[in-house]
Image (cartoon, rainbow, N blue to C red; front, side, top):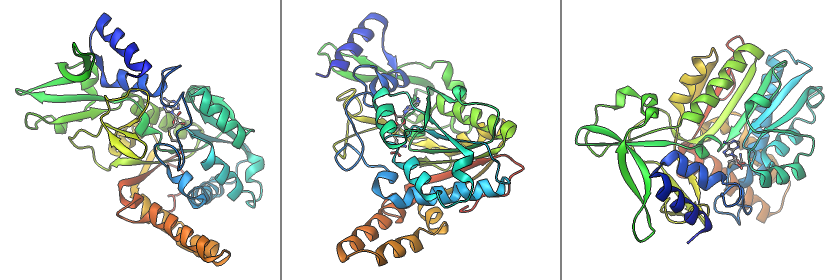
Length: 356
Ligand code: SAH
């Protein structure tokens, strides 16, 4: 039994079953035993590998996208370059390296990281020492335009789950049985049910609906800032273009799927991102959404194919094989190219972004 499982069982015995959102938040961010607050989890040796860890080309394409936005914004001399959930800092390091030749860009930007895990903050400080760290967006200054990136951030935010039983929507909560095993139970739906998509309410018994309140409020806050401060945001994640019924709550440990209730704190927990809901939350605050585009066509439109050829031309046959397999991993339909989606949010006055 994990240390966190003991803590959760005590909490459930004292005050009853916890929402999936509370369970997810504890598993990922518990100060002593959370998944992101414990041992290093990313890269080929971790439980999963993200796009910037697959290849430097991912950050290079996003760096070009951001530099293009900066040009279209009229090359402002003071810009907040914000990343949500930077992991090991690899993506930002690649963005900063790629934009080095862009005259005036690095002088204009200050880097702001939104990160709650102290362990990951320490890792990020090794890669991008000049960054400033904040617990959430409210710590980022409000007096300059923003360029924001978020890769695999929204999928880690806690979701609520609802299930229809006998014609009524109930909330799924995590309970402990007499043997000390965690299991899902159905309880009266809490107030977050009001945030679910009403178009999906008239579905058969057994249907599951998900909603991510913190994702909606963060996207709304980004939209508000883009409208007031100017700039552009780009979010990449796996998920639904259009929200749908279905249970997408999942756990990954050692590159394999496992039961999300099996080893709390030791597996990565995620849920599909509902991009239509994030776009609507930002649009309601005045930002203009673009997309979603699928990751593969987006990266190819930005020139990843040409970049791979260029890198391959300068390396040995082993290097060429590696670069081609990285390109395939990021862009092909049967790997990350279709499941992963890209959403851009912008100040409505800004010219449309490339790649959509
Ligand atoms: N973007 C990185 C890491 C993705 S993992 C990459 O692509 O490799 C998710 C990241 O979000 C981690 O850095 C995690 O610590 C951070 N995170 C998760 N929930 C958060 C929250 N509520 N606030 C701030 N950071 C969070």
